[in-house]
Length: 138
Image 1 (tube, rainbow, N blue to C red):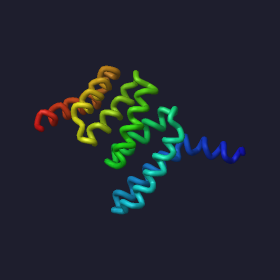
Image 2: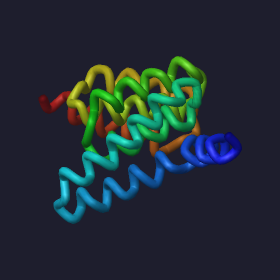
Image 3: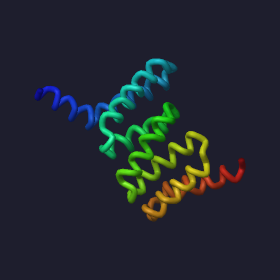
Image 4: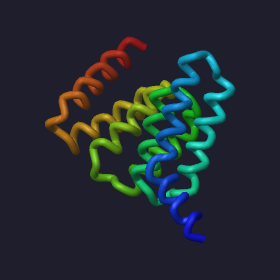
């Protein structure tokens, strides 16, 4: 009983992150099937903690950054926004997910919200301008 509780704390706290980082390393070394398994474990963990904004946003960010499992990334990114709608970092993640999915209109909308919530964040502003420019070229 106690061991299970301790494991769940570890799983929710950092195991999802370890799995994502290991998945990235595997992708980088050309081991896509093994990477997918690791990312799949991270997705399963995020599914077990739908009310934990850190897990939802973190897994969405890692999947988007790896350009993998983008449907799951979108689900987690949207869920994070539902939980914490007034956080620019959360909107930035959702914008990144949309961008990786090639959904430029949605990416720009999400990033515009990120900038509005975090007006001093130059990185958010730079992404928004780059995405707007890229969108105009399509």
